[in-house]
Image 1 (cartoon, rainbow over the protein chains, first blue to last red):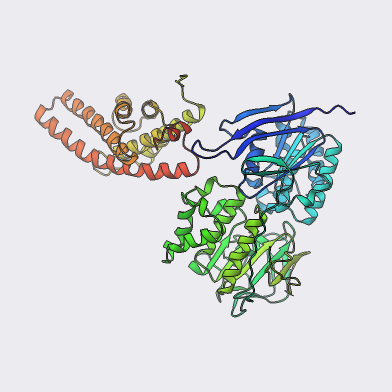
Image 2: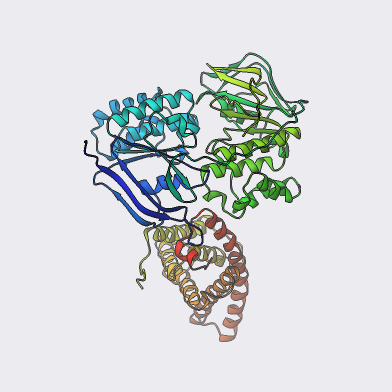
Length: 453
Length: 185
């Protein structure tokens, strides 16, 4: 039998953020060996990302129990929001950063950097600015920045949510190759079945306990039997060429697209196709683009003119959270638009966030921040709701609750446009817009709109 | 009990940050308000923020000494080498008052009280300077009273701003664990 070497071992490790709170990790034990792939899943906010931070040693707070990392073992981590990890300005410099720290001769760096980028399917200029990449491309870049120094253990936080389907396929192929090379992999994932061919052991983290198996959420049942009334056109996009100043066109649109009140339209496209840029343009906050033939609520989009009529959820929810508690975050817009403050409690209840109402939104997990940001833009019931990847980081239960909230809003006449990397079957989406091969297309009625849960 | 006597790197950096920002703002704004005591506003604010974040006795004194040294080297403010005393004396007084006031009052009232103690030290320094200049006791005492009144108003204003700022820092998990765990914030 082949001799198995422990790379890393956790023994009865417990951790909590505050002494007056319960343990988020409660006597966890885990052993990671060469060539193994572990997948950890569990409900949103259960401590999965915290566990990865413990493994890589980035938590400043002390923990109980034992964490043993074998001598010379290197770890690479790709966080849920790769923006939090970038240090350099350009793609080449970012990937080369680890090599610089490892004193790799500069003449060897170029080949290694290009090889790492090729491996994750990112074919872009090394001098290109990181800021010009989409979130999914940034995620690939951060994977490349880890692979370039050949870590012994690679930790990945929610890759499925950030990558499009081709990105996931490429990642699976990369992970298989890494396993063969003896690299251990730890995945944190809400959708573990996608990585079934690579994963050796599935773990579920729930209420602080780590046990073998897949987390099975309690099924929730709700109906949206009443079909939303489709009425007034709130968004109108005439044929256009979308481009940033002094850049090639990002995409074109050759037909008129309209979004009506009460509709839920999904804008589907791969990483970097321009989904987020289009959403920001609709909200009037995308800089460096010439005026576009777009009408939102019968006006040319401009920042600040819509007030409570338009809500935008960013792909990075922490960019729009600023209050000291979740409840205050929701109440901010209500106070601003003179609406009843009780709405905040009602929305928190409906989205199952009441237990977080006094928490600081800045200390929540990525998924929880997404929920709070979504609640804060839906609480004032805008006429147009633009949601950039609203389900990233959410488990099945919270995904259903978000849908429930969106359906309720659409039934009250809100027009909802949301982005996604992939089609959303079995959801209340009424129509799809596709961003494919540089073309924005409307594709009519969604083929499959059945109940959720 | 193993008591930590030194500042952590994080604490030291924050004290340095407060001291530098205090002196930099003072030099950049060059406020000519014609109001005696307005310098107590920035001083009280940064000293109390320093206490709130670092959460240890001695933090304010360290910040005051550092501010004084920086101001002295860069020739900022009136007073020449004595500028060191102007920054350090209120800081020392505030730190000493915290020995008594540590567990008393709510954070807001504690900040105001500690700030007023610093203001008192600042006014006493002015009173001693006036006496050294040959002012009569009677006039010096009137000047002291006016300094205390005007400086006190700016102190109360600055001290009132500190708790909301600390609350924001706490929500971003930027406050030292030692202060939070002892329930001082």
